[in-house]
Image: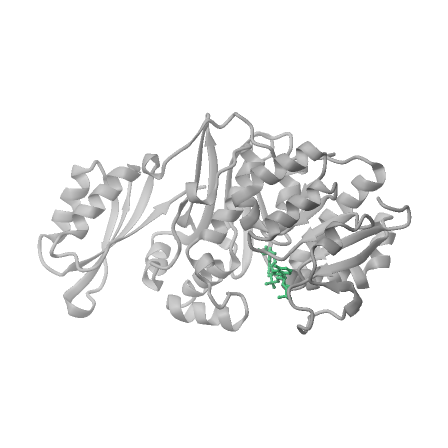
Length: 435
Ligand SMILES: NC(=O)c1ccc[n+]([C@@H]2O[C@H](COP(=O)([O-])OP(=O)(O)OC[C@H]3O[C@@H](n4cnc5c(N)ncnc54)[C@H](OP(=O)(O)O)[C@@H]3O)[C@@H](O)[C@H]2O)c1
């Protein structure tokens, strides 16, 4: 702490999250001091454009476009990075650490790609890096893993970590089922989805978040390009409905689970039993289902994004860091540095589980038998099969659920089935999990 009167905060970014943080620091100063005993002061805010209209009323003298006005100011005690992107966020975070300033970041992409470098630099310097707001917005999942569940050997994490895709899948499951395109349009109109929502729809945002959670839970840094990622673009309202008829709900999940010295980490649409807790996480809400050896199963539920939900997480970090500074207890909570326990990340082809298939076939005798024969030749046995109503051009959807099968067998069988003249569209396969 530079002086004994207050904790000075330097903020990078004054957009959705930054404006919420600035608003709370300016308007809830006394409230925070009363509750925590810590007087916070917003000292400087670095933005790209000084003249841009803001969601918060702020003294223009607090604004700058020069990062060094925060990084080189010895009176600034804590740096909050809510600007996003990899560069210059990475350089700013590393410079703040080098200057001995604890850092709060909401930047999951940065942590997923460079977390090891950032946490190692922080450990070497004895500086804290907190990141509650980087995963699942207002849900205190990071604090839960770092503190509340610290005595547990975590077995698995299943997360609905992206509000946009969860909103779309929820809308597609209502009533007669809306199309993907119409649900996406509504998400955009309501401000849930970005103008370019591809990071969300392709599952990449979820991959960043499960990468951060896996580092905390299993001590393994897995970069996004090492994670198997599938988005929701191929899911239709019919799949959502057929899955429901079989007793399942489709969710986009980030999954990380440990088996011995191996870690399975992947992102894909998943059929969950309708009565699973995660199946009732609807709309823009997020949920993280944790299995620990002491606590058993837990579900953390709440708003995964948004100005004030995310600000709630940043404030929680600020209070922790403020306390660490006042009490001079940096690194009171250990940084999530990689451990050697996990020796290997499993490849997706090694996965084993049950599957939902939808084949679009010509309505002709013998087609179903041919598909069943191909599946059988790849050691895939069918648990149930339903032939749905004939659609246009004599195409009939055939929907199947399998027993346990190996992923590599499934991929080989689907390639063979897709090549059949009687199969008119690429077959849809969705993994089933009991979580
Ligand atoms: N939005 C959410 O609900 C949410 C939830 C959880 C985590 N996050 C994470 O929080 C971070 C910020 O997200 P956001 O939605 O608040 O973003 P945003 O609305 O786009 O705001 C970004 C802010 O950073 C500033 N900025 C960007 N590049 C800069 C640069 N090179 N130099 C100085 N300032 C720069 C921008 O300045 P100008 O305003 O002058 O352009 C803007 O104020 C991201 O890492 C995001 O993943 C967001």
